[in-house]
Each structure stands twice: as structure tokens, then as C-alpha cells.
Image (tube, rainbow, N blue to C red; front, side, top):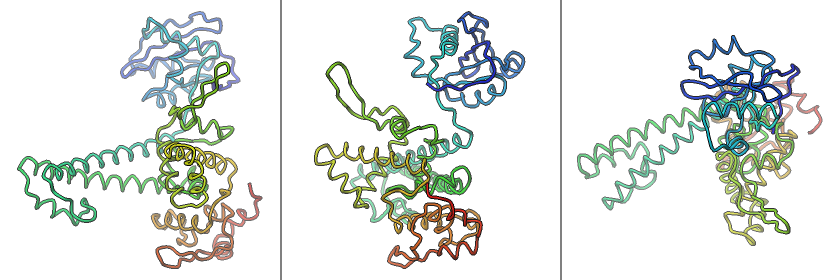
Length: 424
């Protein structure tokens, strides 16, 4: 359980049951005596009540819900300590056969007073916004897939083969318009294609915003350490950064693995010790992103391919790829914590990924640097202390050049600190 230490002595331990249109608040003292009988307050009246009644000697807890973060931001300046409770763990600790809002509030307050409150980390605003953006893209992609499946279903019903290439590309729209279908199906078809076009444009807009965020604090300094990893593109990188938030809250790699739900379940009783499937108790988007990265790593990187093949000889391929995903997450912890290049990083492959990233950015987002200067810059290879002697690589059968260290330092001498600072 987390502990948020306050230098101010706490006199009341308050709990809030947060609903859509009202809250129920109540509290106890350190001796578990009720000092604030539970009462219901409309949300519209809550800000005035809070300013009048909450004190700097109060500790206050609210369960994690959809609107808990904004509520936390409102009350935190008014009390000595503010806590967001892990709703799932609270239910396990304070299970009751009789449940009402008033009973729940006092149960929460007593857990807080006893020091048994299972807390969750409260992400800062920039983390919440990045998480929201990643989740929004995920919903748009899901909607895009549903629309495409609907259109494929229409073709299947009429035993029609899709046009060659991408059937949903803009230049294939006349082909769809020429299909012999009923008037009702024609209406569905037209609406699906129009909605698909709009969703695709929204995905592009979201991804452009993710690219923008990757170049500003607090993400700009962290992106190079993750994008260097095998199988990691910018989307995977931003998804992981959003989910992790602050890497320093994980003292070691195992807690981060547990947070993702990629850790194996354990049954340990008497002389029996068994490990089972992964817990899946954690952030789903982390698991998905890491498994996708793991497949890309084993398909394109000999080191990871060899590790996967060794695992696959003694376990199911799906379990083997989850094991690779778990190892990648351990690498994530190390590179973010130690601010270092990955032990198995290939400078040329990293340079290719960074340059591809730079092509998606504007001149302003690259800090006025060209793509070859950006690839070398203090936020990329120079920061990673990787590939100092690399000047050229081939991509798409074309030779590409990256700026030398000397060229970049002549343009931006302030980056010399990146070279002079000791390796992590």
C-alpha cells in the first residue's frame, strides 16, 4: 500500500462516495469514532461545502472512478492528505453483506484511519491526457475494424471477391459504387464508406498529436530510450510511456511487470509451488503493445529470434511470445531508469527508426534541425551515446546520411554536455 506522508497532524479521516450527481461524505478520528456523520451533498453544492468544511488537518479518500481525478484535484489543496483508493482491493478488505452509501463511506474512513488503505498512483495531468489520447485512438481503430468487417461481410453475402490491393483505398471508391446490391444495402454501403473515411482522418489527426507530444516535455527526453528497443515504434513508445507515467515509482523491474499483468500467477501452499498463466491484472494496453512489439522483435532481430526459438522448444508459442514481451518490459525498466542504450541495440537500426520518426515531424518539432541532424541530436543517438562512428545507412535501397557529432555541435554547442556527461 502506498503512503503519502503529511507533515501536518491529521485529526479527521474523511471518505467520499462519489456518484454522478452527488457525493456522500463522512469521517472518523484516529480512535475510529465518528466525527462527521455521513451526509449527502449535491455535486453542484460540493465545492462551496468543501471550502467551508475541509481543513488542512483532514485526510480524505475517494475511490477511483471515472471522475475521481478531477475531484482529487479539487480537494487536494484543501486537506492535509488526499488519497485515491484502489476500488477492487477495498472491496476485498471491507466486504460487507449490508451495503449502503453511508456504510461504505464509514468503512473507507476507518480503513484510512487504520492505515490499511490500498492507494493508487494519481497520474499528473500530462499523463492523464496522454492516456486519454492513446485510448481515443484505440477506440477509433476498433471502430475502423468494425466498419471494414461490415463491408467485407457484404462482399461475402454476395460471393464477391474484393478488388486487388487495399479495397478501402480512396482510388477504389468507384469499384464499391459499381457493386450490384439492393437499395438498402447501397445505403449501408455508402454510410459505412463515408464513416470509414472520417474515422481514418481522425486517426491521422490523433497520431499527429502523438507525434507532437513526443517532442515536448516530459516525453521528449524519454522517447529515445524506448524507441531504440526492438519492435518499438512511436505508437508503442507513447502507449508504454502513458501507462507507466513515472518510472521512478517502480523500484525494480518485477513491480513493473506485475503492473502490466504479464507476471505469472503463483500457487504456493505447503509443499506445492506452481506458476500458472499471466495474471492479466494490470493495464491491458501495455500487454497488447508489448506482445505486438515482441512479435516484431522475434521476426526482425536475430538476438530475440534466438531467445524465442529456445523458449518455443519447451512451451507453447503463445507462452513463448509472452515471455519475450515480459523480457522487453524488463528492458524498458532498465533503459528508462538508467537512461542508457539497450545492451543489444543496433545503432543502424536505431538510426533508421529515429530518422523515420523525424520524417513525420515538422521543422519546428525537430527544433529547426534537418532529419539527419535530428537523428544525431542530443535527444536521439547523442543522448543514447550510440553510434558515434555511424555516418551512413541504407534504407529503402537508398543511402542515407546522418550528421556527424562535430557537425551537430557546431550548430548546437550547448549539446556538448550530452557528450561530456558520464554514461548512466
